[in-house]
Image 1 (cartoon, one colour):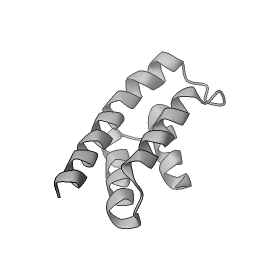
Image 2: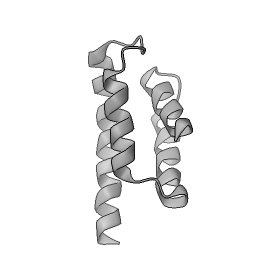
Image 3: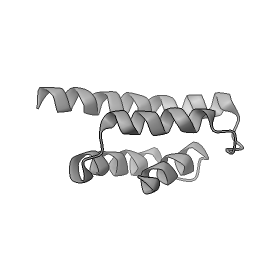
Image 4: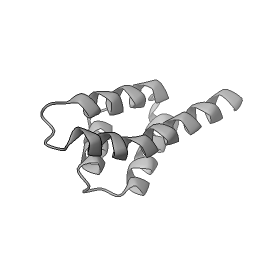
Length: 80
């Protein structure tokens, strides 16, 4: 799980493209049994983590597309 957290944190910092992070999230869910809710929790925690030196507004802005992506994965999981 730490590699997912690190990938998401890197994306929030603007160092990793969203396409890479989405691929890693999808692989974690499909191949490693990580639940979408766990990804949601990581994203939520990173949005309030005081150790990140990224403005909160920027974190929230960058987190929105990831949260939407995870929601889509949840819907796919329920229908499949």
